[in-house]
Length: 101
Image 1 (cartoon, rainbow, N blue to C red):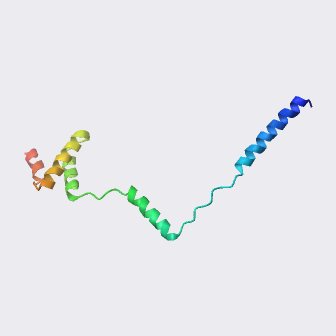
Image 2 (cartoon, one colour; image 1 turned 90 degrees about the vertical axis):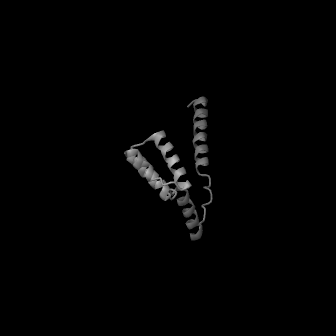
Image 3 (tube, rainbow, N blue to C red; image 1 turned 90 degrees about the horizontal axis):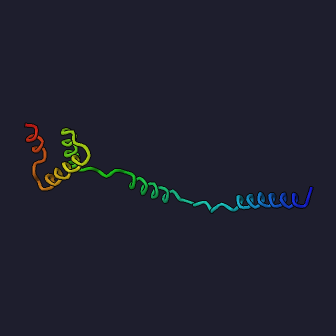
């Protein structure tokens, strides 16, 4: 074997050993959790993912929009106006009946 071949083999071996050394570094310390922390973390996670409760007015306006077959921007506009009317105290269910006649 020539000197160049030996140096190339030594360089290759050192690269392999170095890669193994980095792979065997100590893993980060495991996070210890108590049961109360786990429950709190789980509750926080479910709160973020859980959908908000919808009001009766919101559900009614959605039903009316479905009945009219509204989609997209028209549906959003209708629901916004319907919610304003519902919050103002105007009878929202009467509006679709007037449109159907």
